[in-house]
Length: 233
Ligand code: SF4
Image 1 (cartoon, protein in one colour):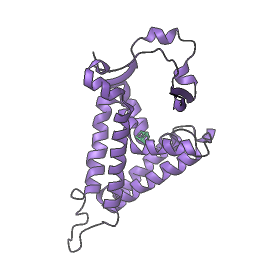
Image 2 (tube, helix red, strand yellow):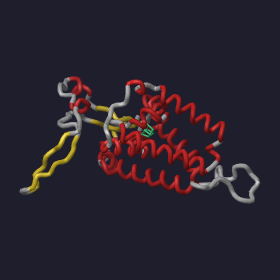
Image 3 (cartoon, protein in one colour):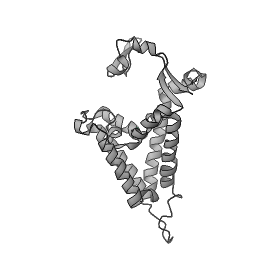
Image 4 (cartoon, protein in one colour):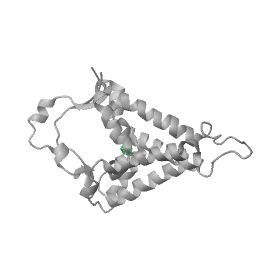
């Protein structure tokens, strides 16, 4: 088993929050690019084929081939890693920090909404062939982005992921079999830990001194003694 945190440059990159932030920003830019590129592009005037842009347009090709297939391959290799860099989950989480922060109603706290979304998507693909047209794909992506923002403004946490994203549920099935994993290296520390500060606490304001100035910064996991590791087996 190889512990990736122990590899000098790789470990440093993986520990840095800026690696994830940069990935998320790039993917958000790609998502917005796909929406803008596909908007109003349905077919090619004068070309009699029903769906001439299915594989030749950036939006439909990038999303249905690269994004979806890439996500499936990544799930096998790295389990739920995609969720750490997914722009929809990120936007949902960010808007959740400034919104009403309501709890999800208990009636929605089940897998039924996500199962219905999965069925709805199947219907859109097989019934309306949205994967063949860039404008339909852009509409799907734009609607998802708006929903991620609106749900985030209403509810606490990643409500969009919980309610509307079938990918997260499917990634969870692959996670136990994936080659890459983020685990606590020394489980005995967790067994003897009484604070459970990693999961039992909200963000807290850390205080730093800089000369005469005092700086406050939101932090998590105060004093968690566990030794996290990303391993490759
Ligand atoms: S559950 Fe879906 S929307 Fe949420 S982070 Fe994962 S892939 Fe993205």
